[in-house]
Length: 376
Image (tube, rainbow, N blue to C red; front, side, top):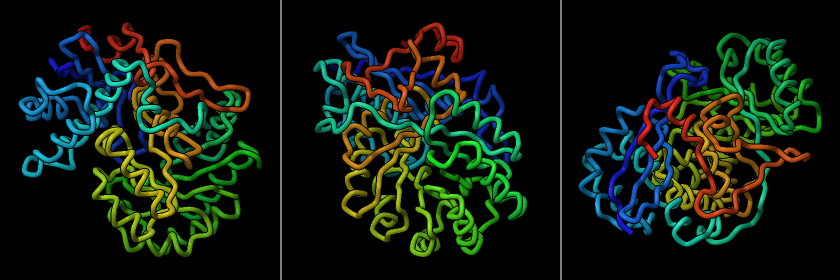
């Protein structure tokens, strides 16, 4: 089975707010769907955390390397693409695009062998997992109402991020966290994401350490992106002295970038994004590396239904992964999935057991949000 062509289409019209300084508009494109078409008619689905113009350009660069390649060897083909990109932008948008290709090739391999991707990754440790609802921070009362609405949907774990947190004053930060804890209750997991990868993040080590102590008072499970993405030495100190777990890594790409963070014990929880880091092949290797260093792997998932499906299979195949991120209120997760997603009475999400990613997209909804009738 050979790769015949790779198509892509950007998602637009309902792009969720990201909390960024330069805020996203609904018509902006930051997520792109990929479809790998084979000479035997099997189609694999992928997702890329990058604007569609950049993905399209990356595919043009990569086409001579992937066209005619085996569609049943995701790790080898993806590594071939990585290895040939040393001089052409490895680590940026090209690596993001390779992520989508790799996810789609695993989907194809699963469909061709009749196996779910999780089993192909070496074995399934679980058939369901707890999703944590991921949503933006807001003023305390608005945030409380939002969290109560999300809790009513069945979620039992919550991450609040960005918004005014760390951007105004300490009293605002604490009022936000206090309101969140009161809304979700003492039995729910609550995580806080400062959004240190925002442009010109103003806070440093001392702010992060002092804030971690405040978060501990509200039983916050982890503190995410408390520092700028390149502040490795400060992250090492913060993880050592913070009373709450330190999480991060969503902006890093390829396993080599994670090595100093894991070996240096800069994180308690590592969060690679499968739609950025190099795909399922690369993320599995990062998860294994994390285990070797005593760091828990919980994937970052602020992307699409395809990214969520990939995260579910990775989570099924890594022994100590106990949660996945679920971006709430995004049509790119909820509406483009044929049949949608549902939680059980314990707030758990089932991991697909059908071949490949086990994901069917609603063609009409994909067309609505991409304007492309020919992607699939």
